[in-house]
Image: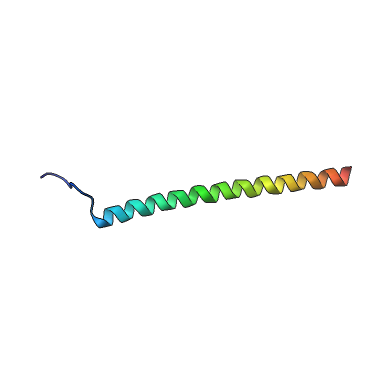
Length: 52
């Protein structure tokens, strides 16, 4: 039997860790974008009240 037929436990854990890290990175990016949008929205409202 050439090659590995089934991945080892270490291979499965490595793949799961890689997927988890990618998911966390994506979540962090989304949260940062949401915070930026919220902060931008608040600054726009402040500008309107100051200039209004």
